[in-house]
Image (tube, rainbow, N blue to C red; front, side, top):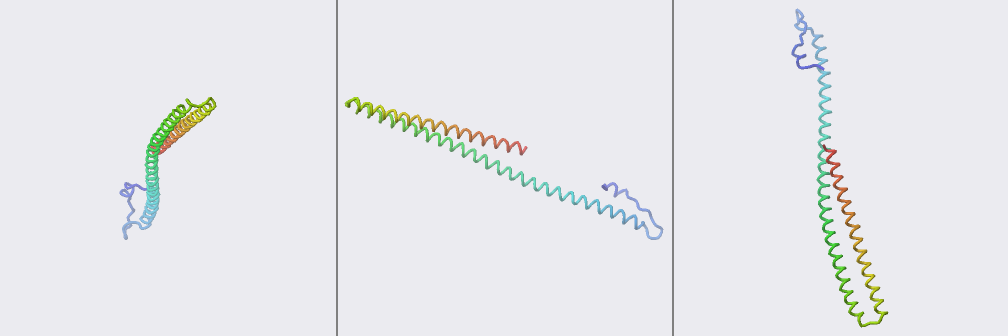
Length: 162
C-alpha cells in the first residue's frame, strides 16, 4: 500500500527535453490509482458493515425495550391476577362459611339423615375451596416461572449486546 510519505518522497527521473520521464509518472499513477481504489472499496465495505451493525444494535435495543415493557406488564398482570384470585378465594371461603352456618342452623332441627346430607354438602364446599386454592397455587407458580424466564431472556439479550 502506498503511504502519504511514499507519495511525498517519490522522485521521477528527469529527461533533458520534456521534464520527468512519462513512463515513470504513468507507472506511479497506475499504482496510486490501484491502491486508492482498494482503499475506497475497503472504506465502502467498512461503512456498510458499520451501518449494518448500527441497525442491528438499534433492533436489539428495540427488542430489549419491548421485553422490558412486557416484563413490567407481566409483573403487573401477575399481581392483579394474584389479588383477584385471592379475593375470589376469600369470597368463596366466606360464602362457604355462610352456607355452612346456614346449613348448621337448619340441621339442628332435622333428623340424622338431613344432618348427613348437610355434612356432605360441607365436604363438597371444602373440596371446592381446596381445588380453588390449588388452582391459585398452580397459577401463581406459572406466573413466577414466566417472570423468571422473561428476566433470563432480558439478561441473555443484555449479554449479547455487551
